[in-house]
Amino acid sequence: MTLTFRLIFRLEKTMGKKRFTPEYKEEIIKLVTERKKKISEVAKDIGVTPTSIRRWITQYSEYGKDAFPGKGNLRAEDDKIRKLMRDNIDLKEENEILKKAMAIFSRDVK
Image 1 (spheres, rainbow, N blue to C red):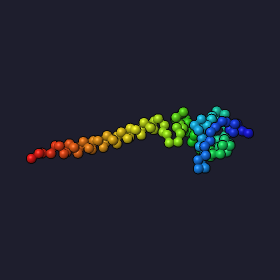
Image 2 (cartoon, rainbow, N blue to C red):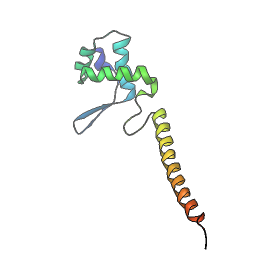
Image 3 (tube, one colour):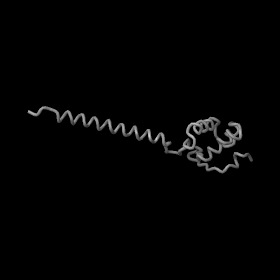
Image 4 (cartoon, rainbow, N blue to C red):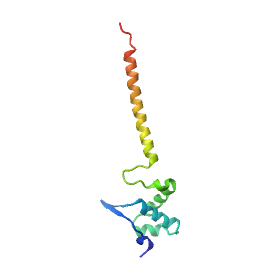
C-alpha cells in the first residue's frame, strides 16, 4: 500500500465524478512538492489525471488556503468582485431612472 492510499480523505462520488476535499488536495500537493513524489504516480494512485494535480498545485500556489473554496462557493476575492459588479449594475439602473425623471420634470409647463 502506498503512502497516498494511507492518507485519510473524504471522497464523494457524484454521477461518476470524484470530488476531493480541500484538505485532501493539500495533502496530495504536499506529496508532490515536499516529498518529491512524481505527479504521474500520485495521479495514478488516486485515480485522477496528472493535469488535475498540476492544476491543484497552480491554484494552491496562487491562492494558498483559499484555493479550494468548495462546490458552489467563491473565493473571498471573487465574491467581492461579484458584489461590486452587481452594485455597479444597480447604480447604472438608478442613474438611468434619475435621468428620465429629470427629463420629465424639467419640461416647460404651459
